[in-house]
Image (cartoon, rainbow, N blue to C red):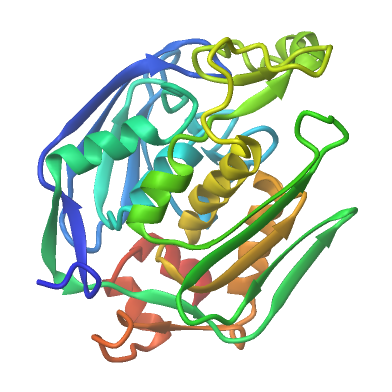
Length: 316
């Protein structure tokens, strides 16, 4: 079967153990193979109440986008910091998987998607007897948010053009522009780590964030604008590459891969979600199609039987 034309799942279960970068709590997470049309589904058990809930990894489930992407109800059962895992799943063309988590946050591991990519590549994928659906961008859709903006443009393929601009001389203005494939993601984006400033640490701790952050899972910039991590950067422009990684993960919540170009300037989780919502709320801006050059076009309602059934109800 052609992996581009048909849905996939992982060949066998994958287990991860770590801590949440914001909660600082221990997390055990298991990825399980799933049938066609399941989509990406988090099965979350709240460590405090013991409540268990299935949370589809779709835009309809977004509960917060402050410092990470949160799915579910932040006052009840939720799963936070899903973007690094979602980026790996989308970039490696994993359409269906059930993710069992015993905490309210995905483990941060080394702060990138590298360990997720390695584990998925190690077990491999299985093609399923169901066609994959794509979201094809038909016209420009743009969202402005202060000095930041993001947009989708029609494009023959899947492309990301992400630019950041920080006052810090350590970061400055950086851009990442590339078509996206599993190989490009693995080589150029997957190892880029989350980052932050020492000057923000006490404020974040007081607000209940970054309690699990350390030099083992974050690039930290000191008060003297120097990188504190003794090993330095993994890429010269690791900062913008991580922002591009985040965008891949956030846009994976479309419920299906998109065909188009995503561009952003000074973006983040909130802007990514707003641009995705703007695209999907304009029925003239996109259409559902099969795999490029290998599958026939499909009607919008057919997404119910393709990639993400829970998501289709939001669109139709």
